[in-house]
Length: 364
Image 1 (cartoon, helix red, strand yellow):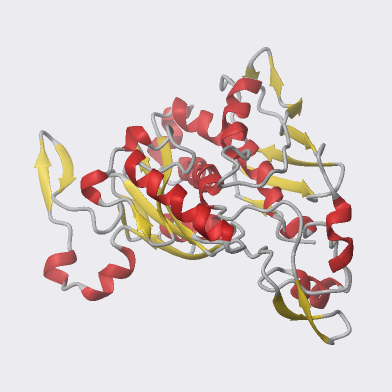
Image 2: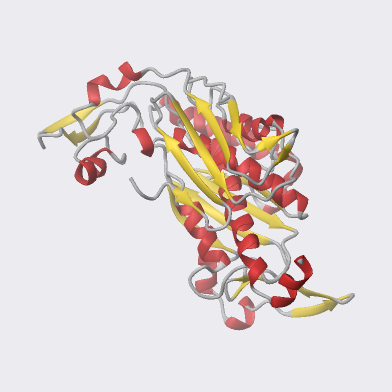
């Protein structure tokens, strides 16, 4: 299988299946002398784990990370960092009845068409559990970015029709409720909605927004490796993401140029803008203002309602999916979006070091 590697300079390779022995990641290109502890990584991992049973699966994994290499006496060494997360709570028998049936909106059928074989126990590499490796790697990327004064913060903007409106928005509240919404009042409404969906044996999608602050102007390549294109590639690679926006995004298509264009002004010797419809990116390159992106997630495909489908022999049948599944993946996906955004940005930052001879001279 190709396509399990992300990045050019800060390069991550993930491995493992949802019901295998373990998942993990190897990170190449991480600079040395970055302070990194197991606690730094576990802080990220704990945010991905199921929390409130009203919004998450009952599957309980401790997601303990083992650092196999690349860290010595609390600092990165510059060599490959290998991280492993063992699976400890699989219930593969939950999937035995569907091994010859294609689940609607899953990758079962397409995996069969591509490989002629598939791991039906939770989807293997296509399972959402694969993201534990990304989150572990993202923790390392975020530590590197912290050293450079760059911060990546994601949160839930909406779940189904329940959306945090601008007047209720308080970023400080997004870590104080189980759905990661920047409004505890809206979070309560979202929890009620999720419960009603769950009672109907259904699922719901939603939107995650992410803000990247402290990134200087000049990061990103102007053609294929644009900052926004790289972020889109990173975020669209997360299972369940069906749409991606930068800045004003889709709303841009409804605007006039005179409204959309972000006018510049001199803010005490610093270039600033009156608006940020561009989302902090011009010509594929950061402009020094906040980067703003948005990811739209589909409803969780595993629902216990009876659905029509086909067997692997292409016979019409119905299916009722049992097992432990999230009625909504959005709250747990917040840290995944954050992690992939961090990986994309730190990689482009390292790529940028060779863009200007003066920068190279300063490093000698």
